[in-house]
Structures are given as C-alpha cells and as structure tokens.
Image 1 (cartoon, one colour):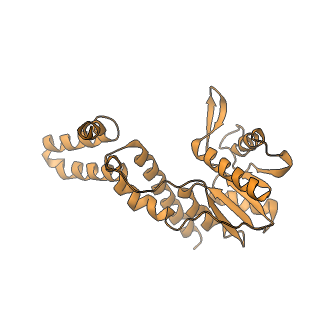
Image 2: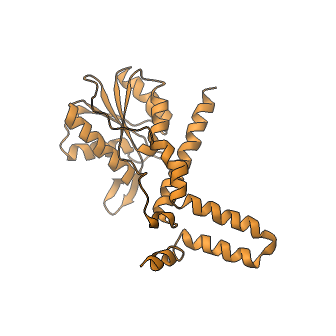
Image 3: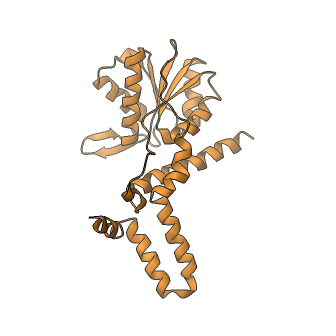
Amino acid sequence: MLFQKTAGAFFVTPGAFILVLLLASIFFKKSRWFLVVLAVLLYIVSSYPGEFLFLRPLEENLTVPIEFPQNGMIIILGGGVERNTRLGDTLSDATLRRVLAGLQVHRKTGLPILVTGGSLSNLKSEALIMKEYLVSLGVSEKDILVEIRSKNTYENASFTREMIGNVPVILVTDSIHMKRALHTFKRFFSEVVPYPAGCYFGTPEFVDFLPNTTSFYLNSRAIYEWIGFIWYNLRRR
C-alpha cells in the first residue's frame, strides 16, 4: 500500500511534472541543475514542507474568540463565485466556509451581518449571492447588509467603513486570508475581532510529504497572500 501511494503520486499531477523534470535532467545535461532546481521547487510547493514554510506562519497566531463585542457588525468577506454552473452562480468552497462561519457567529451573538464582494464584470456580485444563501439558511433580510462595489480586500474594508462607520467588527474570512485582511481592516476600524473560517495546517502523515494537489492549492494561495501582504505594506509607505 505504501509503495502504491508513493508510486501513484508521481503518475498524476503535480508529481508527474516533477518526474518529467527529473527524467529530463538526465538527458539534457547542460540544463541539468536548472531542471533539478525546478523539480525541487515544485516538490516543495506541492507537499507538506511548503505548507510548513508558507501556510503555517499565516495560521500560527489565529484563535477562535470566546467573547464577542455586544454592539457591532459581522463582516463576511467574499472568496469567489463559480459562474454559470448547472446550478447557476454558486459560492466557491472558500466563500461557502466563510458564510457558514459567519452564520455561526450570527446565531451566537444576534449581531447583523454585512457581506462584501463585488464582481469583476456585469454579473451578479458575490455579496448578493452570499446574501441569498444566508436568507435560504434562515437569516432575516433585515439582518443583512450588502456591499457590492469592492474588487479587493482594501476596498472591502474601505467601502465597509463608508457604510457602517467605525463600529466594532467581527471579521470572517479564511485563515489563509486573515493576516492580510486583519492588517487592512485595522486601518479603518478601531476594534477588529478575527474569526477564521477553518484552518488547514496540521500534523502531517506520510502521504502529506508526497506531491499532492491539496498542498499545491493551499501553498499557491498562501504564496499569493504573502505577496499581497507585502504589496499592501509597500503601498502604505
């Protein structure tokens, strides 16, 4: 079984690409070290070592709060929409996790919800789709505000501040996105309580050290967040 899993990991992507690079390094001697370095980098990005390097630092200080502000607003950040599926426009997995986490906070606190997220085209904004989903789960429309103009995290925070003023907010987003989102929202709000919608980094098993699509996806998102975090800090200077 162990041999099957190990061998199998190199016959599907991304492991297959690593294998191709290593085989190519045998035949293309002039580019050997370049190809080997590419294979090593791809292995890191698509396995647990990459999660340790890129994902772990984003999550290590996150905790689920026990107490919440008595007066304030739950802010749920959009995380993407799957467009024109057989079921119409549907929430991506990331957005769905955020909406369900925000719903948990709403049921615990009774605080109103603001969903934020526009559209890069003329299609329905993700915030409106998020609202429809919350209503389908029993949340009253009067308890939901919608911000549909924002195209990025900075605009999420800026336009939300315009709508509700400087009130305490409970910020709901992915653990991967929370560092950048929290850093941004604290520029506009005096009190921001982070509420992560699930975490991903954990104790590894043997298979996690093999190339796999889950690690590749998580590490790709983590690298994107680090780039965004650095860019947001440079913009402040």
